[in-house]
Picture (cartoon, rainbow, N blue to C red):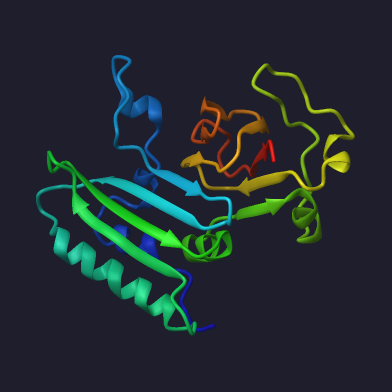
Length: 209
């Protein structure tokens, strides 16, 4: 594999000045006066493990959206060139209606492709598959009411799906989120905000199926 993992979406944004960190825009920071803003970076995973990612970045007038699009297209093409079929699709690079944010939408064939391209941990699969891959399922997961998971729960339900990640975006899941790590804010049965979790922490979302 000759693709430079120091490139990818982080790299083409850094060349536009703000750095990738601004992509992870917290729900609270954007909401303002109790109103939810649509400009929230999100990672969505479907039942088959395919990943879609919509990213928003503040976009100054000194930058050119076409140049950003060209950079993104080039780096996605470089990644895909190592495979017989494309693993990543660049769906959209555009400005929001008011012109204040750049919107970048990308699709990934798997969580592995997302993780490798973005230099983040991202695993999606069953509990047993996570264990087989070398992950340790946390014993400190809690439900929405704050109750800690039963110590034997994951051993009894190895077919439950789990998401394990270091990414601090909002996550949209294919099944209900039943247990999660400390700091996760549930926005709905299938959506969680991870930006409030500890920096550099590995977050786990245990799903209902």
